[in-house]
Amino acid sequence: MQANGGVPTGLEYCARVIRRLGEAMADWTGKSKRGGENEEPRGRRFRYRLRQSLGRTLRTGRSNTNGALTMMMQTAGKDDWGSPQPSSTTPTLKGEMSVMITSGSEAQRDLFNRVRARLKAAVGEDVFTSWFARLELEEIVDDLVHLSAPTRFLCSWVQSNYADRIIESFRRDVDVVTRLQVTLRVNGRATKKLAPAAEIAPSSDASAPAAAAAPQAPATPRLVRDNSASKGDATAGSAIDQRMTFETFVPGAANEMAFGVAKQIAHAAANNTVTFNPVYIHSTVGSGKSHLLNAIAHAVQSADASKNIVYLTADHFMYHFITAVQRQSALGFKEWLRRVDLLLIDDMQFLQGKSATEFGHTLGTLLTGAKQVVVAGDAPPQDLEMIDERIRSRLSGGLVVPITGFDMELRRAIVQRRADQASARYGMHFPTPVIDYVSRAVVSHGRDSDGAVNRPVAANQLTGELITVPLAEKTTADLIRAHDAKRVRIEDILKIVSRHYKVPRNELLSARRSRDVVRPRQIAMFLAKALTSRSLPEIGRRFGGRDHTTVLHSVRKVESMMKDDIELCQEIELLKRMLEE
Image (cartoon, rainbow, N blue to C red; front, side):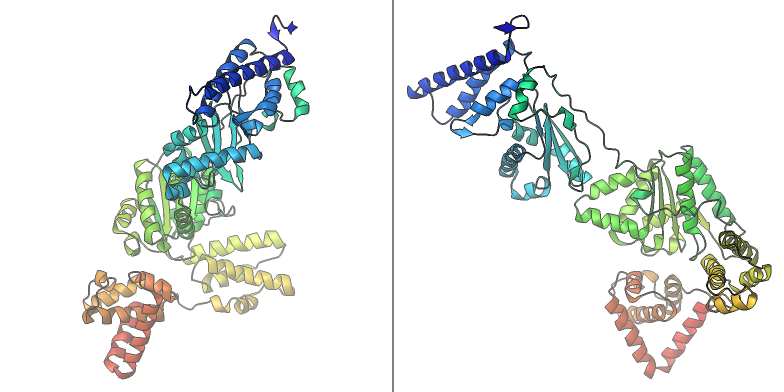
């Protein structure tokens, strides 16, 4: 009996398929016994004949569901004669049915293990370990294979270079596969699934009759583009301090130009234009460079949330780059940086080595693509000795904005702003004489001014003592300096020593060991250790990338020579006075 206008019912459909299977098996067995066919490929020929027979049956009963066919395959499915296989890996019929293999099943693991073995045999152990060992099979939906990889670079590389080879390996078991999609795997899970759980065909026997009752349309894979990499906001780099905005910045004569340039950059970036590029802001510590970079990022993000903004300190830049190299995803790191609309780099003076070289390449690419770049450091570009000359030239070719020392008016404005914030938060009174005293006594930089306000406030909250000038004097004694002593930098030491001993600066940083170069170099290292707060490793890096033990040897050598050489002592004292002046 047939229903639906001559279309076979589920039972008749199964019977017809089983009859075709028997005919194909009998035909294959008879030919094999007669010796008319080679014994070695007989399994392959049998599958081909079975496929032809099943194809004729399916073309006459296509409107039936796959449930009856699935139940039949679970009973009679063979990958080769005498080698039973799980039902989900039974050979499929090209163009005749929807294939869906999902993650977590034994069938999936067996299938992917066979594919991995074929790939290893084809490409070799080394290539397989580099590109295929960390791939995982997520699912197969229709003609699409969904793999996952732990890094974006690996996803891109495999998709671009090995898609055809992987598809060919899968087609040995699943004929209908023609496409490959490789997505990022985060914490052991793929970022996107191609088919939700509701679309997965039921595998239990109890659900097969229900599935046979209604026809299913072939599942359509839904590919969702992963935009997580393209959204390069602050969370992808260093954290943005939400308190550092243009509204909380205190402008004055020393930072007026830098403040105006920063606001202009933010306005232009929000409107897809570039005014000054690149912009390099430099000053001593605590002068507001980081505040301005954070304010730019905050303003642009508030104006247009779709902007691709990356704010990185030099330390984070080097960390990301080294991590990318270790994970063999350096290309992915480069692509991530080159997709930004606004790149903000802080503490440029700490960038060195290959990370600095990579920054130079990124800077060139972004400038060519009219992308805004803002950099901050504690010295002018020409004094960044650990940076390549080409990078210094690019930074100097943009807009270089200095922030000079704070005058009395700016210091008082900063102290007044911090005092008002403390009064609003704690409900206490900050007298004007105390504000005047702190502004006049603390002359170093903005962070010290913040500390000079916080200490009396903390004493008031903890002990209940009123905020007075004597309390401010007691709590800020270590911050008070009668005169702002000149900060000696390693760059200044190199200049003075080079000029005094008539040795070119690049010779002091070179590997030359002649006496006329070694002695001035050792003296310069001694002065760097004595007059700066830099550590031995940092001094070694500033002197041509030398080890800290070399610096320690130079310091001890000069100290030893000074015990017996009065003339050397006088020379070093002269150099110290020159540096302090």
